[in-house]
Length: 590
Image 1 (cartoon, rainbow, N blue to C red):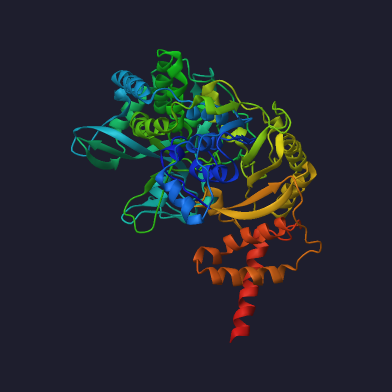
Image 2: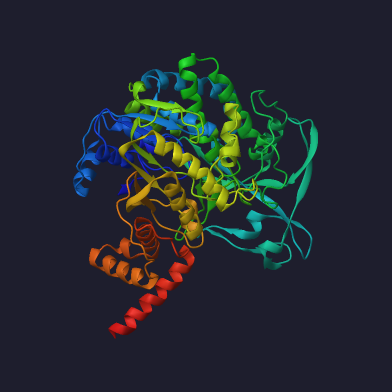
């Protein structure tokens, strides 16, 4: 099954590990009839609810994918009940599943941005290389370093960045004394400032604007930061931050790092002062609009906020590029690089406008179909045997601490997720694999209770750890479920952790659960024999993706789950054993 990571519904709001609603709609249309009730106990940003709406008016792409897979689908509206413990997830779900009239929203959004820009557009003014008046697109800032040899201050940009071609070196080269050393051993420079939002002094990393990217009359340009940029920063320092900006401490947990989070203790420390003023001014303006539009306007602003408005935005050097490429914040983490990017908030939010409007057009007018509840799936307020199907993707063990990741947006909403019932593995919270399994059991028992006797449930899950996989399987079985079948959800674009983590797994295995035991193999299958069978199947498929180590591990996990056996091996160890089995097969063929 393919899950595209594109389109207005997927791109309307960035949220970790979500699955495209179009893909979920195919599952719903295959497993239920129109009018059925669908449940998701870990609803995230509401993809299952959107999928229920899409079943009433499937796109041509959905119909084509159903035909390609040979699915027997029954199109028509379903009712969805979504439980999501996260404040941000439930907020996003409610707005996307019950948006206001797109035209009315569009008029209000345009007016809001016009009014705020009229007052604050000077924040992003800059002179172009010819001395003309331009507008900032974004500025790359740089940590200040102290040369270990001559002890002079050097910016990370000057010491490590080159352009044409673009490169960010892992070695520090001092422009004053030519000292060349590993960047990891170079001291960062700090400064003490007065934090006017907290009314006290604080120590923070010293950063300077390094390179300015802008536009003048539609023409893009870039240049080194100059004295005029510093003069505007001084003017901005004298401007009070709007009172609506949250003055709240960050509830640090598993994501806190002693290095790049140094000096970051409160929400506003994730912003440059310029972007904090810009975003807070937009946020304050929302209250002037009718109540029925306010949440949609906040949704629009938050869709850009954590991913693009903060110093977690960064630049990367890509092969073959003359200049650095600006990106969003890394999803699922709170990483701040030594080259943070300050984007033009007004320009970025304007770019999000069209995507939001198109998403609202797809779901508007079906408010009666989706019931979103900001509550724990361990206590579900639904009658016994009242649900026809469940599609859910629970948190993948210790992959992402959602309450911590989502706090930046939740602070603006004014409510934060209580992490105590969050179903994750968290060393900071003292949640082990065993406690994770216990929480899953409670959630799946509630799901078992509300599902009809002949109903089924599809669970999307992802882990590189055999122990986490076995905890998931044991939780399902302790709740009364049995694994009826397995497959793989093919995501077109992997998440950051799927791309970068050691022993990553490509694609999320899909588990079809039944309330009735369908099969059990008894004895544990030998892993070498399973690997050999998978290699043969991959070769016969003719699809290179099926032969990739990541896909083979997903298939191996599916094999053991569907036969009620322990997953015997972690992804990293599997990749090594796979290499050995492939070498042995090649030797036999010679």
